[in-house]
Length: 202
Image (cartoon, rainbow, N blue to C red; front, side):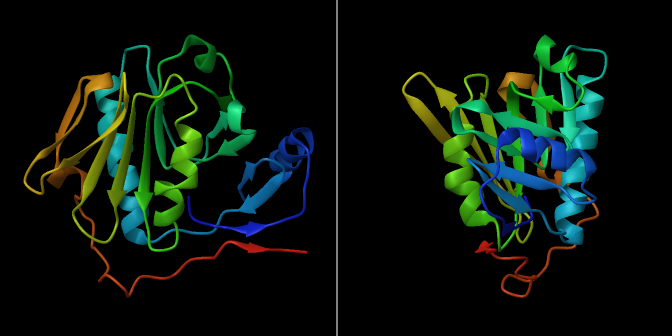
């Protein structure tokens, strides 16, 4: 997510109706609507690389990969998000054209302005999804990838070594770190744009 400016409380029905006509995307969290801003070149390129790699791997099977523009509902949190990349293998999701609800893997690309949210409140809400098996954070400022995997007793963090490979066990997927960062020019840490902060609009 590239974020965000907040509006006053609205219902889910009003949010969905407005989103169908809005020229920009908004995320929804328990009555609050957040307008999504733009992303850096590195952020967009990383997300595109991951999407392409997963699309090639999943082609011909029951799973589908989505990027940026597809809404994901977390009903337990009364929330709708636009993950950078996510995969769902659910037949019910395949039959629903506008909203998906049962992701197997969610991938967020970290930026300066969104890292805390992606690691904190957003991941807290994502963990309410029973279908979710792996949550991946990819840094857009350095070669760092972290994979959180669901286990019987909770979530386990398994960082990817800089010369290692990203493995998504739930999808039987494996690729190099270089493939994910192909054609990516990392911005110096501290020099990337702040993006839009989370500020309430009254």
